[in-house]
Image (cartoon, rainbow, N blue to C red; front, side, top):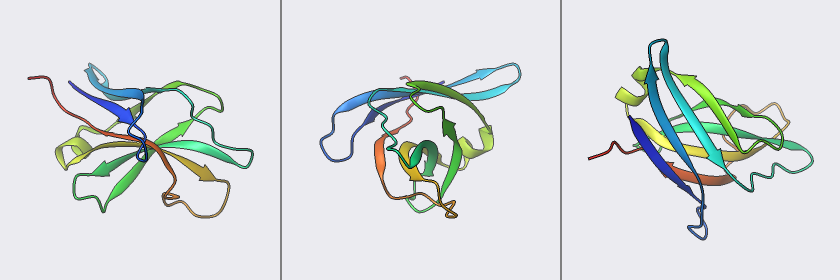
Length: 112
């Protein structure tokens, strides 16, 4: 349905990919990436960012040390322009918003 290459923001190094697929029971976002170090006091979270660059939603948290994960998402998010996949380092704190520390990011595109 749609794919994204996940690259670091600073060097543009490709570290992974994301795929959106549709099954009978809904839509799934699958991410796969390497070198997703959260640090000793944190975790890794997956986000969808709107193409306007201002709105975002958390899709889920990756297991510590995991290089891949799948998350159910709403088709409505995609329809409303949430097409940028972001994986970030987050701290265990009382702040649910994005930390600003993105590991990788990429825009979902559909095959031609």
